[in-house]
Image 1 (tube, rainbow, N blue to C red):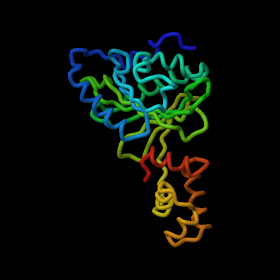
Image 2: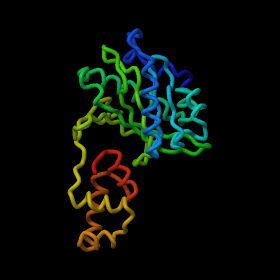
Image 3: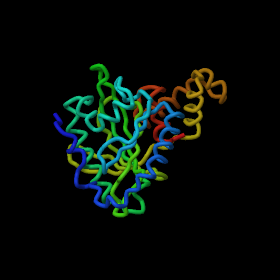
Image 4: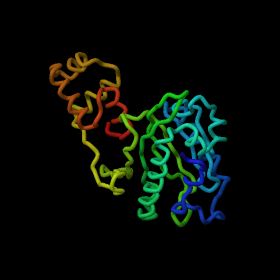
Length: 252
């Protein structure tokens, strides 16, 4: 079990140029995060890697575990000690190190284009909830270290913790971290056909399979096959998970 939050703030991302940190800009980032949080069901928070705390926590309840945003902000990284199952805490440290190892090999000019995605459980009144975190840089120092980062929390589409991925905006290629052999493997995002996108889009709008078949002039059996292919491509079990996966991965 973790005893201190210091383990999260490793030398690989030590902020070494504090004179470059313009805290007068922080309010702009916070206002942007507040605006985003008002328009989404997802939770949002801003990490300050220099002060080693949270600058902002949205009121969206996705990962607050019954806490107020102010309580969550005061806890900072102690949240992960108190509200993540003990067995998964070493996993968080391992992905933290692997993520920064990967990040430090990215050219400086590209670093703001990347984000890391991963799944883990949080404890809400003792009940485990699987969430997804997507973490991306907001502000860097001139040597490429992350000063501020934005984290977006949503429901996971998987059934277990893990699924550590590095993505670059605008690219269909991504890298997945293999915990067993400590290696990043390159993969490609699934591509949905126009028919599959139509089925998903109409499903988001609440239409049943029969109604979708009628709207796009196909048989119910064909719509069923489309859905099955979608489930296989996205590695999900049902249409609800498919909608979340496609939305989170910007496949529509």
